[in-house]
Length: 273
Ligand SMILES: [Zn+2]
Image 1 (cartoon, protein in one colour):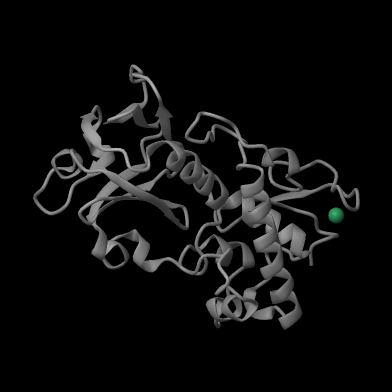
Image 2 (spheres, helix red, strand yellow):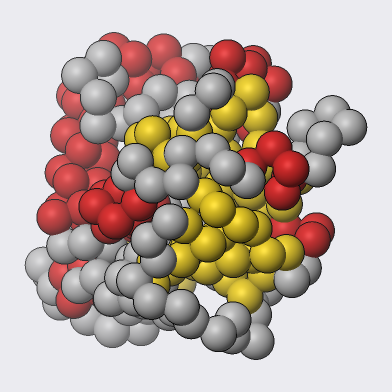
């Protein structure tokens, strides 16, 4: 699933092509992928509007259109947004085609969990999935004290707390496992047992791993591609994710694999305490 670095890379690659362009036509191939607003159909709301900017909040892409309408896109497992400079026939899993005054954007999704919602811009943060999200981990306001506050008095495992988008927005299985390795913290540590120093180390690790992911233009472990259809390269830098049973690159001990918070989790029981 695209996480913060992948969605940020999609945002940047898409924005380069589509900013200031008008959406001339919407072709809905699988209509359930989109949601209109109140009694208005998605295609009626969106057609004819110009794209102003593209933002991101957590794992959500926000496509701001003129006249106060925003499209909130969530890729879920396998969603893709691809820009094509020339006309392109929809592929098997293409659900929506946005024909722009120059080029096309295709929304495709093999697993069909991804969604695009049209919503009046002033209501974005009160009436959509964005309202419950925790802080943005790469913004200046996110400090070790904020992280400590977000954990509060929860008695849950670190792995579960960091996957929880209401605690912190943007991380999924890949970057949580990598951040915990970098911080030297075991994924099954309970958050209420962390010292101030451990919280600081975790905060730094989260920022480092997400920034490194963005710098590498995302992780193409399975099928992730940016809006140009290009792979990222952070999969080459992964220390633990996808490496269960292989030796730890720091101490050489075999990396362990177990299920935590319902997700496959890889860690080093020697380096992570
Ligand atoms: Zn190790």
